[in-house]
Length: 450
View 1 (spheres, one colour):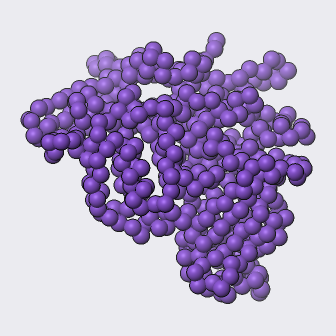
View 2: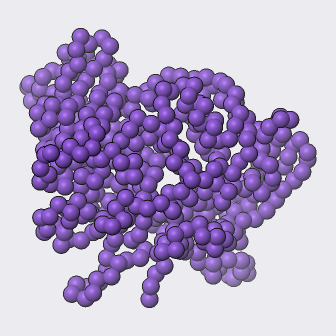
View 3: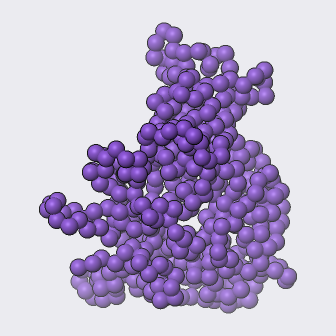
């Protein structure tokens, strides 16, 4: 077992460039910083069923000319935890394009190659039409079975609320078809599903938001913390959980939330087959209160802030609170195209039709407050799915208090369990360092103490 001396320590085994037209693979990096690769970035995203990335190389071996790069080369990255306790993680990408080429000296150039996971490159070439019948989970599995040699891991503890339906793929790519099916799916409470890929395996993953928020963060016993004292500590545990940078942008935009239907929305539908008309208003604050009373959220983090007393009309003629406005109205024409099963735009009851809008409101609340943190990569170099997007991390931020010697208290708004919605792995190959930039959000917060 190798000795770990830093929370940013990196163990890249190899980075190779290959193509069917090559006689042999070209090794771009072979451990210990040897090779021409300067940096590799790999991106995970909860909304995408594939990974993306880029690679910076110092081309002093004339790879661009000798390999005749044309945008179909495969880049294979093998890496492992610094202590070699995990399995070797292998990810394969295709060079999507050469983003930048800068001549740095008479004998060298700096190249930036944009990378896309091989499964996505293949997906974009495939367009097809086919009818599927089943639940959302079943149809997604059938599409993957038809078009990809991959496994779908269903991590959800809840089933989608929509009845069995028929979906006809309208000559689009398999991943686009999966997105259409995923967008129809919600839990019975209107919470969304997510379909994504991770760096730790070559599988697709499906999970719902209720399952996510009721799970246990992988670092629950040792939350990440923004604490400048940690920068002075030399023990590995303090280094590994130290937040080196924290950034928040465009927070608390209630007007944008309202426009998206996150405070209240109107819904209207007419059934073209039966002629029935349905119209309703949904107060999202009441919906979340019902979810809280039903135990949908963990007891220690179940507060969703709604200022129901705010009167928007400056003249106070209209005294309706903000949640009573139809700031967004969705209108749908519903049909019953089949006699044996529901169609894609059909639900069993009008109330179920609103789950789509409730889902969008929930997503708007998730992203009302978005955090980006930078942390050392050691806890994210494992093959554990719990450390990927679609799962929780625990984070503590101290309150702003000028009395540094006072008993430091946790800031309830900025602390708690957060959903990992995006992740950027930054592999500094030349310096053998691994850091991670995480995009985080949460649906509910801890209640603020006096």
